[in-house]
Length: 92
Image (tube, rainbow, N blue to C red; front, side, top):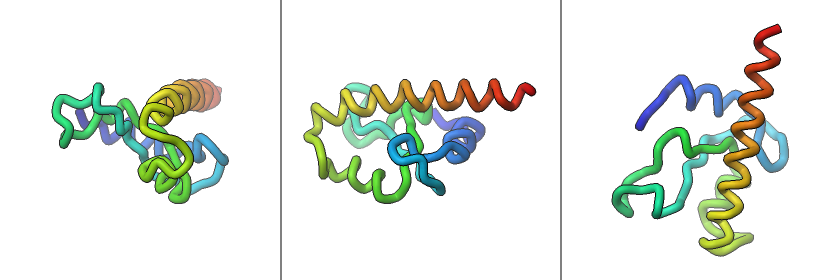
């Protein structure tokens, strides 16, 4: 599923780890979210990561695959909160 509007919103957020910008949109590497192992996850399973943290996540430099699943879910919740707070600020 592709949502350019949603991806644009993610790109406007700071890195979910360090707060730096610019960010890249990092998609989930979780196989259970994919229909096929070669498919990409939905755009709604994305988080904002700076280049360094994106590489670190994709290459499992600081955690193994199973740890990255739990970590990504936590960062996804944080991203959703960041989007919510940003949208609340845009109201005023």
